[in-house]
Length: 498
Image (tube, rainbow, N blue to C red; front, side, top):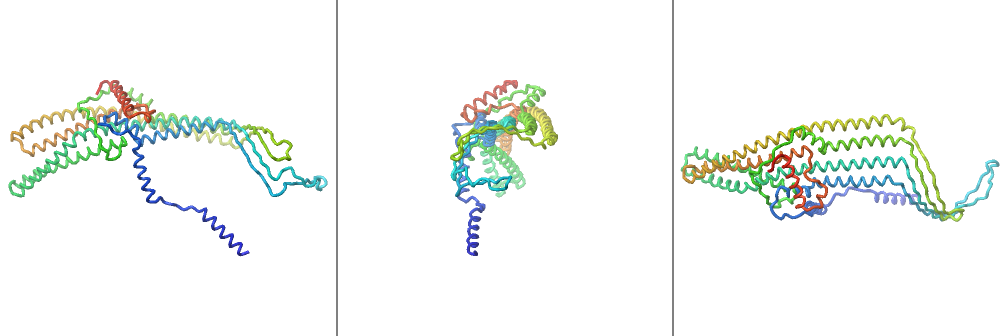
């Protein structure tokens, strides 16, 4: 007996140990492989760079390859698949069953008389030891069909919500590209000049320190000069840092592999921005109709209204009808094959008491959605107003920066001529070279800010840059062409061309 218990304990321990699961962290090799795979997959299947990138190609690459935008596209695809699955729930259920049944002895039975309390029949059987049975039945619940229809409509609205979220991300990505592109253009124009100026400053600073150490220059004058050179050098490094980051940011938006060298098409600084010809009321009206956030609230309200319908429908009695074909190999049966049919209904009487609470809950959800929609509508109207003001202010700042750059260019011509004639010191020449570069950078940044404000005004109105459908299947050149046509039509509608 003790031996049997011991053996049973060993068997039970073996079973329990086999069923236990412990955490298993990924190995170093697995982590290395995942890192390599992610690095390759992040930029896989992208068209290679074939030359300098213009604004519309940068936008097209961002819409095709930006991973944040791809996530939203995948989310919309998931919602569409869920809608497809929900449509199957409205179909009848077709269920097939098959089974084999066997036993070690006969399944016999006897009968007991209820009057005499004596066995009235000798033991007998009506079932074979081994039986194979199968059936195929079709059933359809009217209540389930109604609920599935409502849920499918809710899934359809969820697809539209995902599409609006995708629109919102597309507008944000294009807006970010427009800003980063013009800052990167400034970097490409000026980094070489800044590097050359920094080299000139470094050599001049070394020369000044050498003259001061040899007592060939008054110490105070030399130190003051060195301080001014160091200040100029600090400004040059700060400008270089900002410009170098701009190209990296644009590369990230286009989903280029980090460190990939690329060149940009340099548009003329003199390009004019279109005037803001629309009135504030008109643009606010466009925004309230088109902004993705407000459209999403509309679809959420429809989902909530259908939720009330679903809850009320779920309280009705269910009515289920079925019909099935059956077969059995039991030879004792008089009919081994038969058709079975029927219908049944059920009703939970307590559902009547839930109706009031369900209505209050759904209506509270609807009130919350409406309150959020009104708050968002007010925010949208404010954003349009602010975007209009920003565009006007940045356009004015651009005009000032353009004028300042023109004046500085004339000053630089005068200084250059004076330095060649020996009337201007190298210190003054370096200072004005720095001022010229600073004016160029400010001019470019002002132009980038104005371009960003221009894109932001359209984004605040919820006007699509391009129809996102089909972008994945088109070439970069095709998407860029559609973007260019769309922006040019906008500029004409705005009241001018760039």
